[in-house]
Image (cartoon, rainbow, N blue to C red; front, side):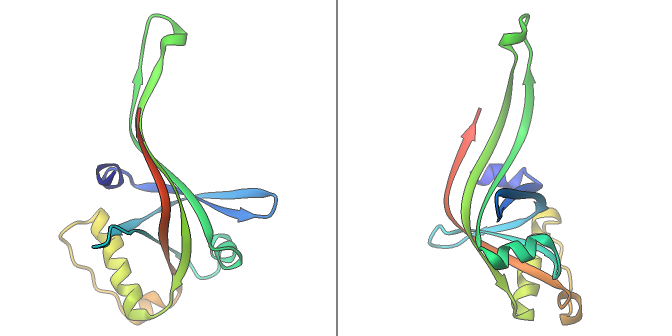
Length: 143
């Protein structure tokens, strides 16, 4: 599963918006703790639909997929598509403390710019929401 996470840039985060789910693509960072707890991190402006929906209901689901490959054939009904995916659900909380926000943003940046250190100030992180998603259940698939 870690290979899937390492090769995916975007997760599709689903939140409860009344009658219909609200789904949004977001970049992410993640870590696997020493007790095998998978945690995802995302960030957003403090005022956004996503932030308001998570404040109303912290239960979320998400999907991510990568390694797409079309499989062709002579007959249309024999076409297929290879991919790897993870489908998951979890509990979202907000990271409020500036030092913890900075540490989390470093985790996120490390996914996209490994081995590079960025500096953030409290002023940099004040206007953003940093969200931690503790994964409760997931399935990984290779098709």
